[in-house]
Length: 376
Image 1 (cartoon, helix red, strand yellow):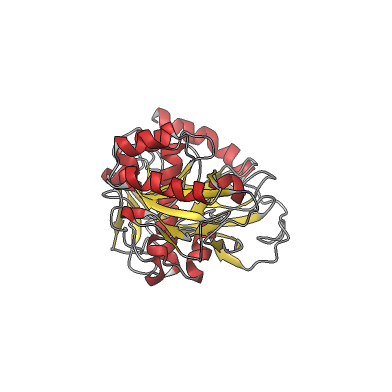
Image 2: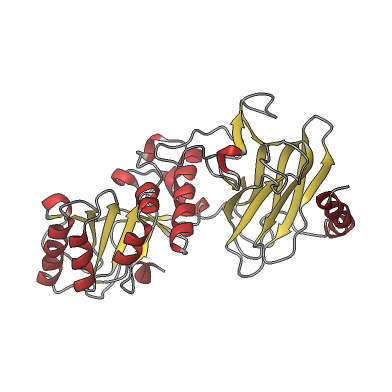
């Protein structure tokens, strides 16, 4: 027997003991929210298309350690619908793990489940605040089998990492119809300005395709707190640039979707992929999970607010002034007002747009401030 299989055999008794049922409230009851129970998983049936500008070979909503060399959406013999995830570990040192971040509430009970096919397939969650044994099966004998595990989050848990994986040298496995059942979070709040009596204004800069040293220099020289909303592709191309331009205290990098599509034309499930996948990229690149979402084209609907909340976003933010591409548009009478949010873009005009926006703020007796500091 191989070393990997010996390790598995030695762990079976411990996993079985840990997985013994324990008394627990119904999903959501521990939190006392009274919210309806919903499936919080992103792309749970592997039916959603990859957004434009997504990483090549990515599985929407999921991150697989072996990438497209191991994990692919297949259309043969799904458990339900037309698609399932099939993972073929590329070597003897891979379990073919695929995972996603699911936002949760503290002190709340959740039930995770998935239909699987293969040998030694595992389903589990980390970051719950308590030790949780994975659900697993030695074999599904060629058919589909449902794995289920239950956990109650700790007092500080805001997100968990849901994972599925096989085992070393045990061949391919498939996954479909994943669920994380728990209380629906309250929808995010839509805002175009930030209520405050402080004499402050908030500079926000979108997209990230054109990054100039002149704009970077102006931000540094004037010590401007900037809230950046880059798309994942330019952020991943030049993360150090965005780290530099958000180095001033109060600055942050937030969420602007994956593909810059009109989300109001997409169903909630696809909006959740757009927002959650962009959140995951920003978290990986910059170390902090976004809490603000800027909808492309300022186009959003009630599904956007719920999808954003499902991704841990608290505020869906538009703006009430636009100083992009040489403009000086204030969408209310008079000068800029306390709490106004100013829209700009990472373009070749930004080095000229920033001083014009700063002059408008100074004319109104306002100074730029850190957006997140005032939201939460």
